[in-house]
Length: 329
Image (cartoon, rainbow, N blue to C red; front, side):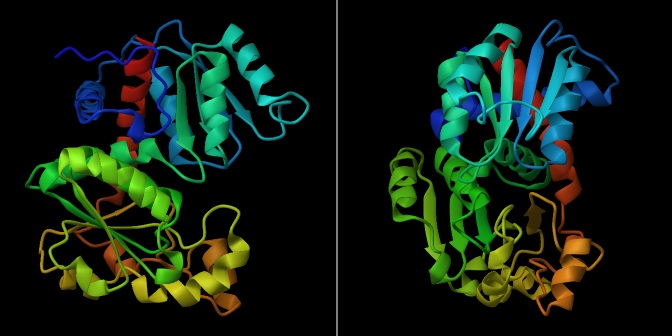
């Protein structure tokens, strides 16, 4: 079956079939091999790409900029406060203006509705670089990384996400696992249990692929896990919630003891980054001085042989490049 994603937006994995997601993963592998061979491409030659960032970024920005330019595209970076987008000019009007200048748009910000409206009113391929409820490009990189290190296919993998199971990474993983027939366990306190409507939505996709999507507040559920995943306990803009999150989530910190509880000597540790794993950041030091240990993962785990977080970070480049190439050419 020939797959073409030209002209499509990449807003959520829920919009794609398992075959289309597989196509993007396979394309990313090819583009990674091409880059490592030193071959510079022109797959995006002549394309103009707009990157809109209303939230700060390291890996997402680096991946979109580097990926686009390595394939010959020109990039405009627009951050909050440097344009009239959403302030003196509506999202609809801005999108229609962008369509006169650009071939594709990346958006990283807050509301999922914003990235959806950009796609609707621009008519261009629009790529979700992160919203409050989803992070689809991260999941592609995570799946690619798992396939590079695991000894069995994705549909036999069990991923356990530890921490705030209502955040964008937990939901993005639910979408990805539902689509690819994987087992996903959201592990965290009942106070932060995922929205029932999200469970209902992914349930329909899971029924088609054989995926299992579940929630548990019992750390014993990590037994048999192939991947243990976590994220920071307070997302961007939630710093005032840190005291309460530390109280609720400290029992779900990823430790070597937790990895041992999996009973899997080859268990992988993944994290979307940035991670609080030591006290070498201003934020971690400041919060510790206030009496809050915000480390969601032990430094020993982060630096262990189980950790593939830097391979995972690199794969953001290759999977994002695949999304741009697939939707623009």
